[in-house]
Length: 232
Image 1 (cartoon, rainbow, N blue to C red):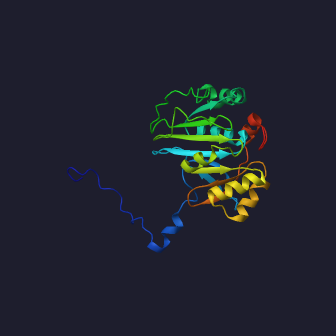
Image 2 (tube, rainbow, N blue to C red):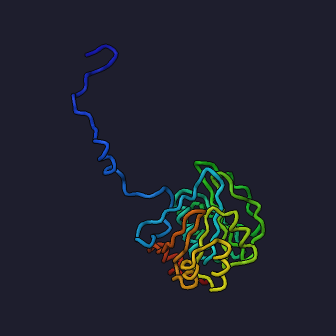
Image 3 (cartoon, rainbow, N blue to C red):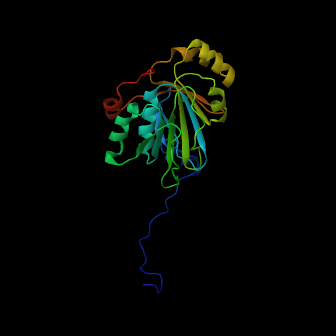
């Protein structure tokens, strides 16, 4: 024994690899967050929605996709506050989520109370307020993301798109696709595709990246929400 240092442990070789072999140790996982579907190559598309900085998302699409996102965000540990004028469309989801815990709460338009987000309890506010959502009382903040659902391209869309860090576009009319191409500087091929997208497919856009993603429901999600659909 050595005084003050305990027992001498077994002698083993150091665990080391040459520098040119480090890449082989990489794990096949993407960014942290929730899986929102698969990309054109069949790889998981992951959205990190719980962030230490304010984050705004605009989805021009269907209720089904918004509800899948809400369910999957709740599965990451986020509290979901839904601001909606059609509470009946969300009631079943709110009751089924969280195994009896109130992880998804419903609020009338303009009546979302302060949520008190923090790192250990992030919040996602889903605004399902129709074509012309009013300015929300609860805005994005650290650990509080806001997802605004627009069923179609509306007069308020340019304002929302301008401040959004992430934009999702599902199937729209050719006229709407042309407007979005002008607003967002979309390439011609992607703008043309917007009017022919299948149910469950979304073009997700950030400032420097665009990606088509297919969202496929799990068995539990299908049992609760039905199959993917663009129209409600």
